[in-house]
Length: 569
Image 1 (tube, rainbow, N blue to C red):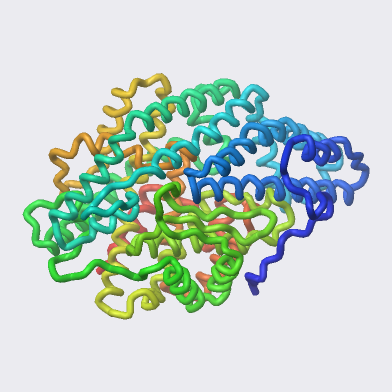
Image 2 (cartoon, rainbow, N blue to C red):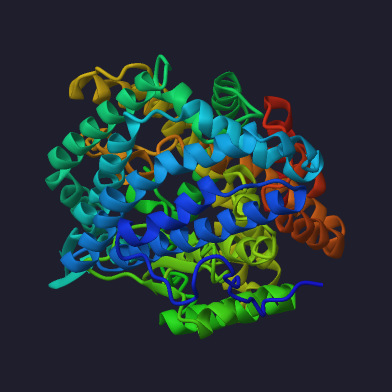
């Protein structure tokens, strides 16, 4: 039914050999679209396809610039190429995009477009027109460049352990050591290294907040949060729903988190559980080491995906063949992980920082789920149809984490290790919720109070952190580190307000897993069908197609937490 034999979208409007080098060469394509006479329904639909082709070509160029820069943040040529696009190309595109949106929506033939096919697409265009302000163009350009400075700063962070230099991602493997003193040493060195750049990251965040706030004011909003909700296309839930989610996490998830940490404390035989103990195993139990090299990681993931559904494995094989993978952690590489859809060539790019740990398997199958989504949505007719909401995109990735567990014997031939790996995954599913709530609630406060001082920000961060704190781990003496923990979260710097999606989608993923446990084939069919629709349906309808309810109310959270607790045994 599905194929990973992905084809680059053929060009009909833009020459095959055209590359984005400067605005002078690119502008004529936008001018032609703006000035073209459209006098029949057929010509209107062709105009939409030509515009989509241009968008895909430009978007892919921008994506490659960003990919190359995050893979090597110390390369000035790559940084300059990315900055050139942000400062010289994108700002010139914005007024044309707005004019083209208006041309379509004001055109008398637009009423003849199939409402079912184009509803979400046209709704998104109306939103873009409402938000567009010429004075925000230079602000957005500056923000695009500034946001990438987070990766530049953090990409340089390394620590020395046992006389050897490690990136922070690589150093985190020492937190799994049986040697408690070594765990504490690694934990403290990682935190101390973060503190060295505390001031520069805090100042960067201050600048980002002010520019974002100005964007919102320019567009007629009282704060950036309300502007950003509109910009992200959150048509189907409100800030009040987010606040209810925060409360539900406290009520229904924190008790489970406490159970998990109490078991961990007992398992390790500790009188006091400290933050550096969370990834450790009892004396005599080796840390999980599911792979040694990034090549082994991708090959094992391909095997795992193929057992689950051959099409899933084919997607990763295609990416491997195209060299659309950069998996190893190294100095000078930006932190984190992502799957970047490539609008024209179709096969996306996966970026991550693997260092041989269990968490890397979770990240790989997570990004692999995003990649499958990219493959499934690529055949859709217009680029705009593929710009699916993040709340369904994260279901694609998080459900894949849970589905793939059925075949994790690929990573763990030892049954005891396999059981531990699955326990680790389910514990992670639960323990991530309080952090999601903390990051989301913090952002609401930050942008409701954009003129806050650094001291006020720290105080409010600490207060929010305390609200969602478990009652088992002893954090005494670590207050300085805890006050700075928000700087770990790249989303705050690079993609503001993108975090509640993980909470909403984790609930959706648990719902998909419940289906999977009941009827594996039907769950996989629902999954693929929903993802292949891209952005052509509303978020509630995409969830419905996947066999889910778009519901993150306290009642629904309670039901899903009970299911996970039952699965944990």
